[in-house]
Image (tube, rainbow, N blue to C red; front, side, top):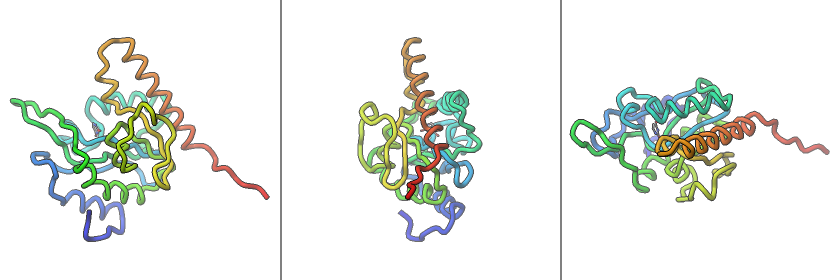
Length: 204
Ligand code: URA
């Protein structure tokens, strides 16, 4: 939480960038990217090794499969807003490798206020929770993805719950890889339809 209420996304980002990492060792905070008022905002878990090095969200293996699925679903990444629930990379060092570690509920809570402010500034039409950590950050509750997958209201913000792209990478056999990838693309197509739908007008 910040003592000083930011007046703009740029100011909020400066605060996040200057904050002390909850997870020691990460290079820097990885900020959200994309245009203000993007129709769709995607929220991931936390930056990975590549993201930490490059300082941009979803540029590693999970980002590659997300990009591919977005393209297939007709969503322009450049016109979308992409961010993470947690802004620093949490890992354990094994030799030269930095192995991703899931953030705790307390760490997610620590970054939650920033995420909420960020989305208030961006004002997307729909926010997509990619996986359980994003769902926890957006709803404040640990909800299972399987039971809640699909359209979901996050407070005042219309949303959509789907799997994290790294879930697709973890599939071991070709059939489930293909099946889960296609289900993810179907989700993104629904998101696109929801984001572009005309608001219902009440006549009379
Ligand atoms: N996984 C995430 O959740 N976010 C990233 O930015 C990269 C990988």
